[in-house]
Length: 487
Image (cartoon, one colour):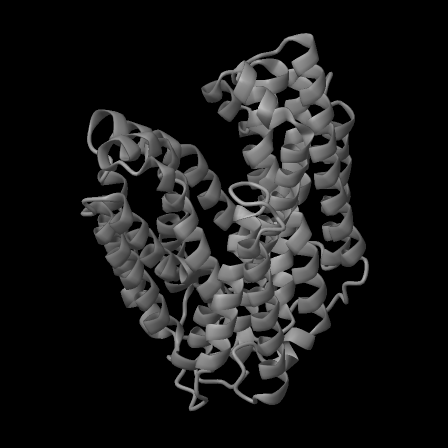
């Protein structure tokens, strides 16, 4: 790879990056602003039984189409693909805001996901186009800062809109944000060459991975909760996922125009990094799901205070991402940084497991901050390692594949830890005794349950560490290719 192009000065580069980060804020804010408004939405539209699908519909479609956007960006160019994603996302936002009933709201969220699935990976791809790999980690830290900002501001904005104004504003707000993002990137991104490769798009492979991903995610979401694991529906969905992924593998082998080229999938850096982050990302997100419940059931916190318990994890993650990204400017051996961050995550999460029943709040916050610091380092480092390992023509699909497996890992690991929770009997005890019952028997059951949950999360972190040991470290390229230059 090469350094920044002569026609792209520092000002133009910064303009592109800031525009891309505004697009990312559009996607990140939408994933955090909705939850506080769900009770109000249920009251306004009815059909409360389908309320969880307001979240699930978006997550299903956005995960499933991520590889498709990566391939489109490589074949048709970054700008048109990014504009398409923003346009579809905005259309979905309008459908959600104007929805007169729950069915149409869920449909609108699915359409939003079809656009949102491309925003995150495309932003990372665009940054990869204009920032040399050696400097890229610094900007990946900015990505984590965007997520942290959305994580803190989203629930506040969503709650204010739902309680004091109108719930539909949580979707209408996407329109001015999208307009600002497109305006910011339109002029600057004209300096990037649009790619128009004659290779056809693998629609058959795209359909297989979309259907297979949706089937797998539905099975993991419903299994053990609304439906038994051995029910015909869950078994049928699991079988459909296996068949679709099997056929997709065959398509990769026999098609020269496969959605994910076999060369990319065989790349040892991508194989190792995506496999490790599958477990790391799933374990990290599991902490954001289970820590508030742990604080409620063991320490007797209310829901609002339990949510504040995640601040240490969030701040630690942002700090770790910035530390890891900036370290690339000075430390060329990024594999060592990844192992250090992974090891810190293992120790901190294992500490949570060991003290699940007895840790005071301040100690828990310290461990959560340390876990965020270690795991946060891996986010920019893993993305840079993947992008550095491929030629520019495959940058989009490599980045999207990495994002896809990270998202898939969150579903699998969260479902696995959810199975531990359901089998412990704590859920039934909460339902029978109230959400904040902290008598001795209940606290003991909760402590044992969360010891098992945090231990499983630590095992996930350990799996990531072991896989990272096999990472082939390649020197970071210092220059990005000029416009029009072949990769």
